[in-house]
Amino acid sequence: MNSPGESSAARLLAHKGAQRVPTDRLELFQLRSFIDPDLCSQLIEMIETDRRPSTIADDNGDRYFRTSETCDLAPGNPAVQALEERLLALSGINPVHGEPVQGQRYDVGQEFKPHCDWFNPDGQDYEQYCAVAGQRTWTFMVYLNEVEAGGATRFKTIGKSFAPEAGKLVCWNNRRPDPDGFPRGNPNTLHHGMKVRKGRKYVITKWYRERPYI
Image (cartoon, rainbow, N blue to C red):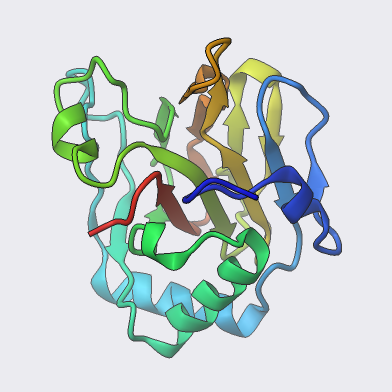
């Protein structure tokens, strides 16, 4: 049985079409055609309507670290509910552990430089972001469209890149157990939302936490 806020390789691979990247450095999966083109279009329209400049907990003094635009997707919207239902069926994670679904829009030249989704326990904002709901456990990301050039997501430590493809899901476990048996943030989840060279990229991201997200 999974711990609260956790999915598992067995659960994900039981889903038809799910593939695991062959590495022992992290748990990383992809699933093509996770959502259909119509749902992708509805989510893109929502992002376009409510987008704003993206922010980051700690940019290390680099104001160009994350240059995309972001949209918090309304949980009561039927398209968002349909997406959440698909995510629950795939991951098995109780929805109370999920952060609100977020959409991102990348125009030409925009990127999110190499980063991990988990919060650094030594970071200045760790207590602010993790005091109640705890650390991030899993990330589920869905591409909503193809991009003419650029825009791949590159996991640098394992040399693996995912090209944007409408409806394709990529997900990973942000943590790994240390020798003492307690999970710690996995530095091998370092990934780069690479610059869009031509066209535009839309994605949605869903993060889960150790404890209910309030």
